[in-house]
View 1 (tube, rainbow, N blue to C red):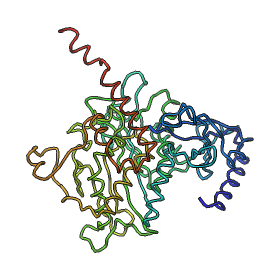
View 2 (view 1 turned 180 degrees about the vertical axis):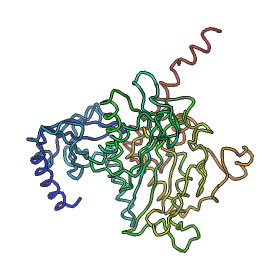
View 3 (view 1 turned 90 degrees about the vertical axis):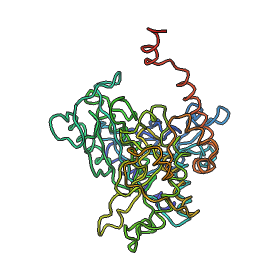
View 4 (view 1 turned 180 degrees about the horizontal axis):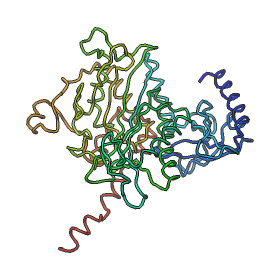
Length: 446
C-alpha cells in the first residue's frame, strides 16, 4: 500500500471508529499452522497502533521467534478494519489483520501473511495478479465432545431434514455485514455438512477472509448452542470436508487464463500453470493437507482427490476446469481440489501460486486431460496413462516436501523449517499414540 493510500485509510479508520462507538479493536494475525492469534487494544491506542504498531511476545506463537528474539510488532492493516456484528453495538468491537514486523520495522519472515505477500509481489513482477475463490465445507455437531450431526440432509437438500439452514443463513448475513460477498451456500453431501462459497478476490484479501469466515461459522454455531468444525474427516463413513480453490491470473483487466482462439478457451498460460500444479502437487501436499486427519479424507469413493490428473468436467480429478460461460472471460479458472478447510490459507495460496508460476516460467505442458472416472480405472490403466498419486499420509507428505526447493522458495527458510519440524512432531505423536481402535481390536484377543 502506498503511503498516501495508507494515510487516507488510517484517517478513515479513526473517523469510523468514533462514529460507530468502537471501544475495543482486536489485532489479528496467524501462526504457521493457520491458527488465529491476536490481542485487543482500546480505541485510545488506535492512533498509535496504526502509526507504529503494537509490541507483543512472539516466543509463544507457533513458528514465530525463538526466546532470544521474542519481541515482535503487530502493525494493523487499516484496509481490514471491520466492526464485528456479533458483538454489542454499544461499546462496539472491531478487528484488523496485522503484518508482523521485527522491532526495527523489517517484515518478520515467519509471518504467513508476509509469506503470501512476498509471493504475490513476485507474481506482480511477472505482470500477474493472483485471484482465488475458495469453497469451504464444514460440519455442524451438537457439541465438541463427539461428532453427532444435527440433521440427516444430503446434497442441496432444502427440506426440513436440513435443520441447520437458519445457522447457515445467519452466517451468510454476518459475512455480508463484514463486507464479505458470498456466491452460494448449501447443504453438502454428508449429514450436517455445509458449504459457503466466497466470491473471488485477490489472494491476500481472500486469505484474511478465510480466517474471518472460519471464526464467523464457529461464533454463530456457538451462539445457538452448537459446534461447527472444519476438521477434514470427523465422520468415518461420510465425505470429509474440502476447500476447493478456484484460481486465475490477471494482467490488468484481462484474464490470462482465457484464450478466445482456443477451442475450450483455455490459454497456454493456464495450461502451463496446470502443468506446474501437477508436477509439484506431491511436494506441496504437506501444506494443502497439513493434519494427520487430513489423510483420512483421501479414500476413493468419497470425492476427495487422490490421483494427479486434470479434466474439464470430471470431478474425480485433482484439477478441474469449470465450464466456460460465453461472455464471461473473467470466469475462466483452474480449480485445485486438494486443500481442506483446516489449512493455513496464506501458505496454501502461496504454495499454489509458486507451483503454478513455475509451470509458466518453465513452460510445463500438462498431460492430456482425463475425462474418465479415475477411481474406476484399474492400476494398470492409471499406470499406462502416467497417473501418479498424492501422498497418502502425513509421513509421506513430509518426505515429499523435505527436499523441495520449490516449497522452500514459496514459504521461505524460516517458515519452511519451522513447519516441517512441527509436522514431524505431529506425526511422531500420532505414530506412537495408542488409539481406541487398537484397544477395542487387540486388547480382548491378545
